[in-house]
Length: 178
Image (cartoon, helix red, strand yellow):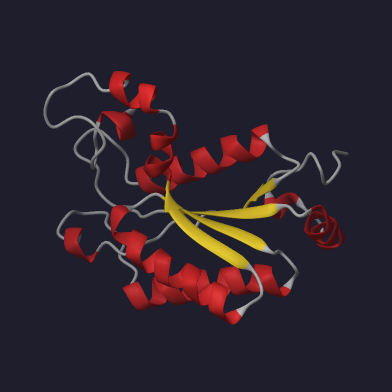
């Protein structure tokens, strides 16, 4: 059996192991996304797939510091409801759901929490959810989008894009496709 230090998926812990993770200072990462169209070539799950993959790889590399929560797969996508397969969650429900997840983690003793966004229209809603978790608990909570993490290495940004337009980092782009 792996130790709590080695486990990086929150839902693989037992409830006594959650207490150990809290004592270790592990940071829960909550991947969020949406179910929506991504051009003719990508599946509907791209947003939560990418956020979950980034969170999982980060936690795998630093399992002693992080835990990946099950992803919040549905998001605020009212603007693309005309595309078949889109599943929209009202913005207030989305915010409240994420507040509840964050507050639950804080209640059990986690002191640092990250919402890792995978869908552009979720960003302002996650900012509000993180702010509420900060105000209503003793935990520190932040929200960021996974693609904003690319700015860490400026040399990377110069070389990853191949096409001139539209390409780059946008909806159903080279980055999401790769």
